[in-house]
Image: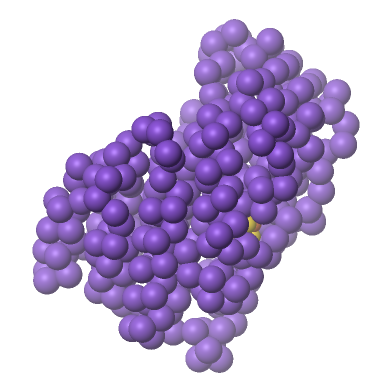
Length: 304
Ligand code: SF4
């Protein structure tokens, strides 16, 4: 259960692993409008300018929850867009107020990471900012352009390397099915995503995270419209598994400390392990799932 105080505007989202974090709003909404995403469509993007008011939320949480808060997640969609000195100030203040705090994280767009200098990122890490969750979606520049992600494979690889250098943990989220059901496009999406995973690997062995999710087309999105006009045709569950198989197959064999996780409820099969160590095991599990539909999570049990 999340700890909640202050000025959060519904609906609120956070990564599954932040289910027990204190949620502190420092922005409202998201800076972008990706074609598949409905999460923040109802909110106009804004940055909370009054830092003292945010600090008051952090203090209030101490009064409500005592010393139980161990994690803080800065909301909303793209909190990393906030200026580095403000992020660092709020992070430092959070540790002052919550004695058992051990993690501070936020969603981040690759562009906003790249726009911060190495020195700024190092300063942020030193303040105690621990982790970014980055919606990568694809390593394929054509897919990134089509979904209006506003970034490229090169930029995302650079963002990952900058975070590794600063010692800010990296969690990258891919979206299976985003290229649609054209077999060639789907395969390219998988291969380019694997290429990007290889480029994101840290130069020294530190833990990092890759989590593919599966596309679910929802109302109030451009992709929903594109389905109704026939411009976009979604993948079958078998195609999604083939995409995942290709993606894993094309990753290099030395991705130690890369935690690979498909346990998200949107996926047809749950895998969790270290990519280098478990690659062959993952491939066999997916091959079994491709052959036998009963091994796949049924659609009615899939959700976001
Ligand atoms: S950047 Fe993320 S949260 Fe914002 S619109 Fe795109 S997918 Fe949604």
